[in-house]
Length: 215
Figure 1 (tube, one colour):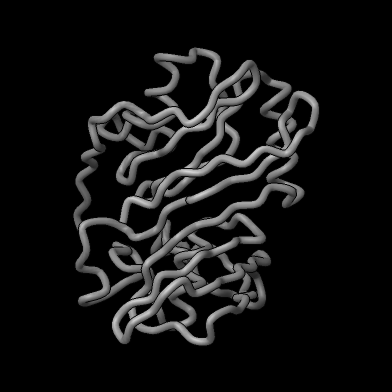
Figure 2 (figure 1 turned 90 degrees about the vertical axis):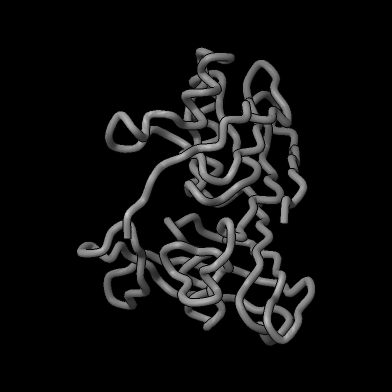
């Protein structure tokens, strides 16, 4: 499958910034960090660097995922936020549209994941060698053909939400790696990082940031 990187031209939408942190609404189709090769140099952190030269990476969102993403503006904030992600002290909520009707209305996927090396970046379930991965889900609304869910990852593995939903038999609509047939035939991956709660690096006060779902 050939892939042409054609990131959206719009400037990043800034949700919040202060002396320590920068929160933005990442567009679908834009890399978080540079990819391999000059044709994949354009990325979110590169665009932000033009406005905030001191910006530092904390976490990533997949190329095809949109929504809330936080960056640090000081080394202290980068360490502080990095530890929160590592210790699972942040709270992340995503919205996705899935193929088919997902039942029951709530549940948890607890399946360890590992990269499928011959097919990387594809990830797969591996009970022997995979790293622990857990995702809570809650159905928002459903029809016979589609389900809208909120997903709350308890861990932050690569492609975790995409593989976990596939494991339930309900791939995320528009997923170029894991969906097939009609489920894949959508203009974008229907996965959006709706909200993120962190403790502010200056003082530890809990703060939540959100972005409206574009689908």
